[in-house]
Structures are given as structure tokens and as C-alpha cells.
Image 1 (cartoon, rainbow, N blue to C red):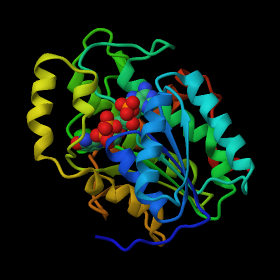
Image 2 (image 1 turned 90 degrees about the horizontal axis):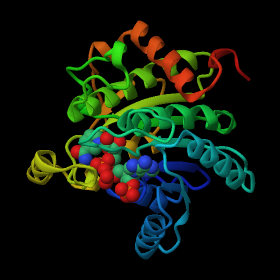
Image 3 (image 1 turned 135 degrees about the horizontal axis):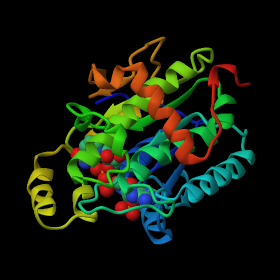
Image 4 (image 1 turned 90 degrees about the vertical axis):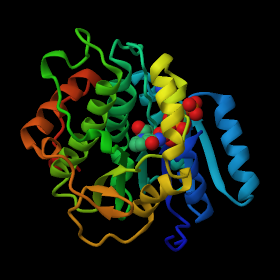
Length: 298
Ligand SMILES: NC(=O)c1ccc[n+]([C@@H]2O[C@H](COP(=O)([O-])OP(=O)(O)OC[C@H]3O[C@@H](n4cnc5c(N)ncnc54)[C@H](OP(=O)(O)O)[C@@H]3O)[C@@H](O)[C@H]2O)c1
């Protein structure tokens, strides 16, 4: 167990903070004294999570914002709300934790027509990071943490069918979205190279006992997750690496992929600069944003 480093004065956004790993992450960071902005997809779930954390830590400096992250429009609206909330403090954001994730056993599309796992697990972090970058730039040492998975190993991106319209396999869609998290993190660091005050990391939380595989699944997928989840670690253990990366002094580490609070080698495919650049450019187009060269930005 790592020490409870006090992080008073730091502002942290945690998406998917209404259950599982994200709720545990938000609670741990609130306990350490940070100002935590949790994000959830319904007012009721947000209220429940806020009550839960405050019942454990009555002094928690905590606020929840509602956004369905499958919608790019709502991601933008969320970013605007985060800007409004932080403006009443020092206007900066120290840590963004892109944690929200979904596993969907049927083919579904977002409001903008993107395959659902791609939309929630990859496009939302991509766009939210882009939108919140001006705030992260104002922090003395900002971090962007994206919760990926060991599922990113042994897979690749099917560039001819990125939306998986021709052939949908739920596990493959999930693995591909988690690979996208690592490709995004690596490329983000490359684009931020001139700005050493901001670093991006991808996290593998390991197998964690959450309800993720029960929310948008039917049949065999539900059955498998019901069996499998019990082999997983607790949500607190699942949150430990995100909390570690958000709070510890990491020196000048160049390691981008972390598991159990230790750096780990991510898949060979995830380290390909060509694939990362290609995904980045396609993601920009899907999110409707102009080409970004973060190294040149001010
Ligand atoms: N559990 C594991 O074994 C495991 C392993 C590797 C990686 N991960 C990753 O860890 C992250 C957290 O997963 P978890 O296991 O903690 O699952 P979880 O308990 O289902 O938590 C997922 C969170 O994301 C939120 N969310 C889902 N779809 C959303 C949307 N469209 N808009 C806004 N929020 C949305 C959920 O909201 P609700 O509370 O409303 O459902 C919840 O807060 C995910 O990125 C997942 O891929 C999990």
C-alpha cells in the first residue's frame, strides 16, 4: 500500500467516477485532499457517488458533472463546464483521468454514428484531453492518465473497417479501443515533447471485480463476466496505479504504460509511431477538430 500523499490544492478530473475503479479513484484522491471533479452519465448516479464518498470522507472537496461521454457534443459541453468550475479557483487542471469505459456485446453506435466502444473508450478521452489542454497547460506539472487494459495486447487496428460495420466482435472491439488508449498516450507524449510539464500515461488496472461486463451485455458475455469478475482484485487495488500516477513524483520517467504502480512494456503494435499518427489523424477527423501540433502551441 502506498503512502497517502496529501495533494491539497490540486484539481483532478476523473471520468467514470460513479462506479468501479473510477469511484474508488475519485474517493482515494478526495481523501488525499485534492479537489475532485467526478464525471458520470446520469444525475442520479452522480448524486449516489457523491453521497458515498462524502459519507466516508465528510471533508471531501468534490463535485460531480453529468455527461454521456458517447456523445462528442456532451464531451465538449463537459469541458466547458470544467473550465467554468476551475475558473472560480486558480483556473488550472493538474490531472485528467480518462477512466470511463464500456463493454458492449451488441453493435451499437453513438449519437454521431461512431461504434460505441470506440466512442466511449477512445474518442471521448481524445476529445476531452484536447478540450482541457489549455487548463492542463496552466498547471505546474500536469498529467493525463488514460485507463487502458492488458486487453490491448495481441490485437491491431483494422484500418479498413475502423467502425467495425462489416464484422463486429465485442471482445475485439474492446481490445481495439484499449489499444487505441495506448497509441493515443504514446502519440500525445510525442506531440507534447516540448512541454515537459505535461506527461501522459496509460494504466493497466489488471482484472478488477466491477460490474463493467454486466451493464451492456447479454447471454454468453454476461455469463463469462459473472464468472470472471470474481477472480479480479478489489476496486481499491484496481485504482491504485491511477492514484499513484496522479500523486507521486515520477521524476523524468519516459515510461508510458503502468501496471501495479510499475512501468511495463506495452505491445509492439502500440509503440508504432506510424500507427499512432494514423489513429491520431483519423480521431481528429472523427472529432471534427483541426490538426494539432501540441509542441508548437502556447
Ligand atoms: N474491470 C476490469 O477488470 C478492467 C480491466 C482493465 C481495464 N478496465 C478499464 O477500467 C475502466 C473502468 O472500468 P470499471 O471496470 O471500473 O467499470 P465500471 O464499474 O462499469 O465503471 C465504468 C464507468 O464509466 C462510466 N460510463 C460508462 N459509459 C459511459 C458513458 N457513455 N458516459 C459516461 N460515463 C460512462 C460508468 O457509468 P455508470 O456508473 O453509469 O455505469 C462508470 O462510472 C474502463 O476504462 C475499463 O475499460 C477495467
